[in-house]
Image 1 (cartoon, rainbow, N blue to C red):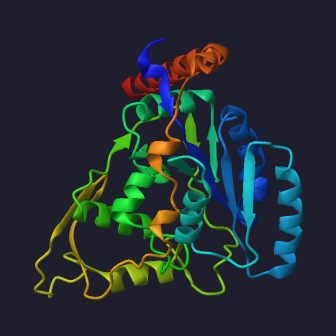
Image 2 (cartoon, rainbow, N blue to C red):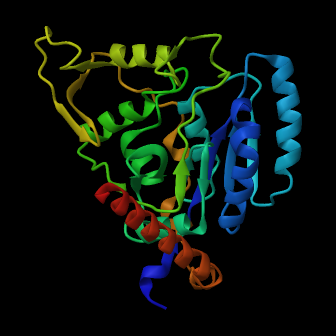
Length: 302
């Protein structure tokens, strides 16, 4: 078999909460557990300020997840920041790297095929489809950049903060294109953090946005500041200069030594069986993509 089908070990992490349970998570996790049946999936079940709602939710979701042998989970009574939830998916994994995904997605086996193709070439970090809704991160990157900043108390800006820290260390922010996935980017309906912050831009925590401004100088937000900007971020549509403010370094929330030794854990396996079993589905998905592109062109030419 060609070496391009040798894939390093990885885990999958997903953060979810009660507002996404019936609309996305029930079908989503079932699909995910099937497509990645040979990989561990770590679910961080976030908390909520409505205790009665949360108790019923935890009863239901924990019972449902017992159906999937490759899924393990952590429950939270109270809401935790997205940064903390991401950190805990990393802490709980048993492999050197993890694919972290949103809970409002839909995918086909074609996504795994494309993802593993890129993973065989880059095993440390990349975002997918110009979005932090799904990204690969490894022990190697955590050791260099550090943990996601848990001082962001809700959702939003934690990814931007991490990109700035990567850029400061001259670590490239690589993006890849994967087919076979739909990211709905849904609003945060009945968010678990609504008791501590207002909603900004339909789905983000306004407190997170304010903390981002507290942590960083930005040329477009602080034009009057005479700052020697040392970071030039140019990713997707984000282009600006920045510099971390004094005494705002990201704390070391967990001892880095907790992470497993990469050299001991890295193993390789062939995915020949997977490709053969899902070959027809993969081909059909590619045909579907081509047909959609042709129809789009015909529509534009009318």
